[in-house]
Length: 210
Image (tube, rainbow, N blue to C red; front, top):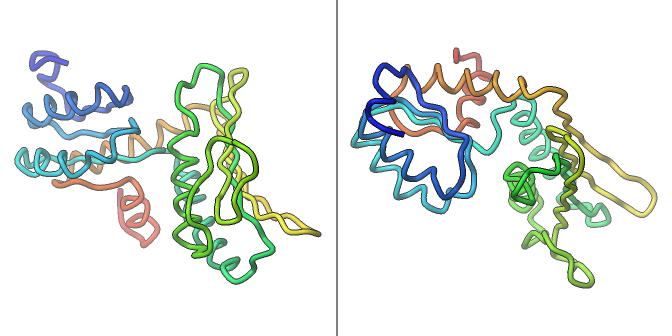
């Protein structure tokens, strides 16, 4: 990504790799172009990115998933987890399906769903993404399936001895991601600062314009 390549660009959209994204952010900020980042695996460096964006005075939007339905799923799961907080017989879990070529597992979206469960349930302490014997009672299993060409499916369940409740989101076409990315791009162009895509969804749900 060169300065010449960025000339005349309205908004930069990055869906690259954790290894490349930080350098890309730096170059885009130096060119003072708004940016949308859908790459995951770098959020532990967010505190390093924040001053870069602030100095450049650009709009910057990031998120693990720009599908609008997934971001509504985040809110449904948070609400549901609070309902199950005092029902210990209902054991939570997350399962995600993606195409065989997807490199990371679990997906960033699945990990975000697991994080929401941990925060809202209050009775689990960690996520279990690889099985080695029994899962401890305080763990939440986050399982991954990689097969075929599926663009994405995420399921959150609560299982009890005599019943199960499951919430599922299925991507039927990759355009689902493009719609949210365009929302984010418009927002980044019109606002300065660093925002999560969840913040943009919240503004929209409260009657704001994106």
